[in-house]
Length: 128
Image 1 (cartoon, one colour):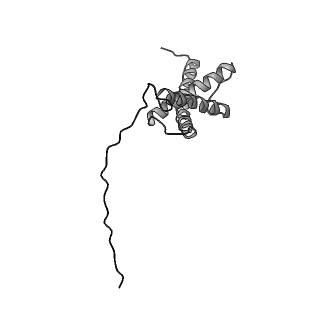
Image 2: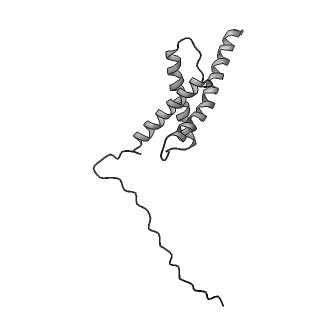
Image 3: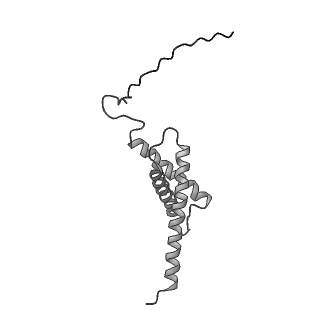
């Protein structure tokens, strides 16, 4: 079976683009979490997913508006729109997760376990 060399280069280009988008998606997710104020939900996997999603959304929109150009997050514009996309995803993640608004009539209360306080006895030392 003989495979066309142009097809192989096309596949290599797509694989390279996907790996670059994943790598920069991680950096972009961390940057978006650093910019967003407040406590951040999720761990490393959520940061990675938000970064990759923001990169796909931001760079995808940039590629849509600038037809015929190859858009990668390595460029300045690509990095900026990828960070904006991840920031928007993180914003909606916090909004839908109930970090800013509480649904229902009664506010949600967090119960903390009661801890016993230690009583310290006063010790008096006389310097002689």
